[in-house]
Length: 401
Image (cartoon, rainbow, N blue to C red):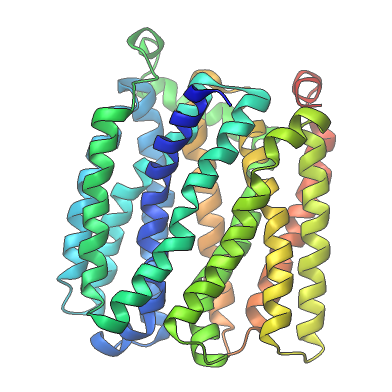
């Protein structure tokens, strides 16, 4: 393994994990936060949606700015704001304060979530980029595996506010990573033609590129299926199935292990079969498993072991979909990688937020609305794959296949 790729994966993976860590770590505390602040389920979930909404919208600014001034300055600004937002969350006297503070925290977090994809594209393409993306996801896996466990321990032995102080400390660690371990990958010579006008033009180019939009939305609905699980899992697993916070964290981590573990096959599979073939096969597996899960629950089965087993397999297939669609979408847009990465992230998170809102509006205390929403996302991703891969332009198809 190229040591340069390994180092890049470690640094970028840890940076990418900062935002999700701020989500995953406080998931086991959602019921406790509601009880402490006198908020209902919808109010507590609003703090999660505010965080994601901020990430979705503000990426549109971080991406072009990073094309104009380089990758590191926006990272410094975003991580500093993220840290301040974490402290504000810890001091929240009401659910309204918490929602606003989470929005501010999200504005900062999206820099660390959007720009690593652009940094990957600055230096790598094709199978190397796919391998780096999968390794990045391996490091990124510290969030869904360790964060809920850490949050559950804090909730059992301390106050939920300590979680946000810990998250603020992670923001400070991110600043140190950028300062000492990350090189600037957008040299001054590459920024000469970048401006506000070129950013607007770049967004116009991307919005007219059906291949870019299709690939981004395949990943968007795949990610939305996971976010639907993320937003509802603590209430379903703790309140409906009776798990304690630690058991919930273990259950949540198992799905993350499947997602991340299978993603590590991306480099090998893409070199052998091509990116397009991997996307098609993975999406086919994803829809089969998730539709089967929805059918079982629609017929009246309500068992935790069935839910756990099928989600484990389904999210394993999703682990191949996310990195491959990201690489394919950015393949032809290296000159505006920051802008393209930002638009991709915005499309994905807006889609996830909408899906979360729809699924949440049907929440009835059981897993049925959630699994139906996940299956719907899989169906849309499958339809988009059939349309988009077929329309791939010849140069891209040749490079990928």
